[in-house]
Image 1 (spheres, one colour):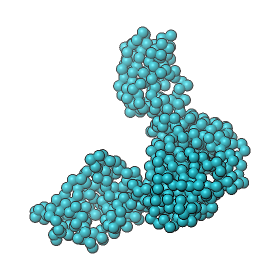
Image 2 (cartoon, rainbow over the protein chains, first blue to last red):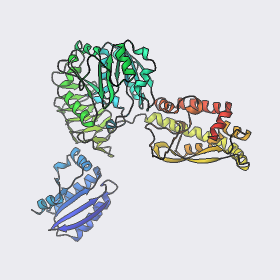
Image 3 (cartoon, each protein chain N blue to C red):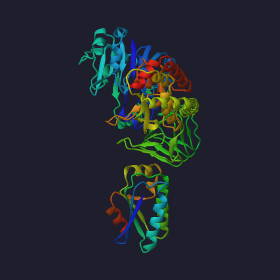
Image 4 (cartoon, rainbow over the protein chains, first blue to last red):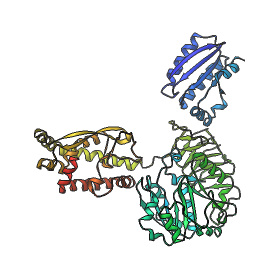
Length: 114
Length: 478
């Protein structure tokens, strides 16, 4: 699992790559926390999941935990480019009701910037 | 009149639905093959021959001797590459009284005007081809039957099915050829057609069919149309339906919502999940629209409620390992002694062969090769006492092979994969009974495997190789 974070018009874009599972959530959490600590002014985030081909309940749990932390700081979190298999996990767990999911990063950024 | 039903062969679309044989996939909660048997009953056929392929044991376990349907069911195997029609040609006279033949994932779909009396119109003769092969054939006319068995390009029948629809018989012969089709069929049945398959005395006026031993707490909401199989448990505050088709032995945990979905048997659905427009088979979730599937590793989401054959294979594995250890202890010193002499005189050596081991993994199997044609005394002793299998016994101890089972599948240049239900072993039926066909023996072993069959193979193999030392030595020179 690799995590790359950039800032675009005040919105933090977190690009994840690889499976987001119990084996990789710790690395994801740490890398995200380090970046968030360095960019304290970024409140809104877009998670680009176009390269996440698999996700389990631990991976989903880590996204929910990230959402909780971001909203507690008064920010917002959007998901973009959810692939077919992770989308199935979102559907059966009803996680699609918790997150705002967009087809493209641009759409998600526009929504996060508003 | 007799029926021949072919349940073998692969159906690629069915493979995504798990390891269940395609003929046992449920349609509205009942295995597909049960509809075929019911058709036989309706047509007055009492003698049924089921041709088996892989997963034969499950088909045989379900159909038994046919007593459940008042039928007399017997079984045959054919080789994977053989056409089932060739089986009919072995004894063509046998089918002269009439023949019903099914060789596809065919669902005899009853139309609204279906009656059992109208079904007799089928007996005038009918042949349905699907993707160039005969999927369904029925006739009482000897010339039509012979023409069919001889695989004449066009089998003339008096009432040929046009696209599977047979108006006179009130029947639509639907060949399932993809997951979307299979899913739609189930949804269509649960949404109104299911009542056409109910035996007399049963009713489904409310559009709900619930099997035996189904536990539903009072807080569960059941919204017809729905179908629930036998031995199911549904957790409190769950909502089932509309359009939910749930097979046997399914556990649905608390606060779930299931609608427009198909849940195959032996499945656990975890707490607070929403299954909508999906097929769930054990721990696999399938999107019927495009066949995408997801194997969920979290047992608290979706999971298998039981593993099939787990205990039987576990017992075999333990016995296989202990017997191998015993053989290794007994053979170690004789092997070192004889093999040293063989090497000293240059009479033979072990050659490496790449094979598929347990789980299809690539392994190296050492195979004894005599250096000269003809059998010397040393080679006869070495092979006759099965010392040539000593290195393979070590593969059993390291978990790469079984002691008894099927001949290991050699890895070919084209990368052909090992067959399903694969039990590569040191000794196989071909060691014990050299005259039998290897592929047939592999199929037979997968079907009948047990500790007792393993002991039988081992006893016969060791005795046969000892008594027929010439053949054993010749096998070593191959």
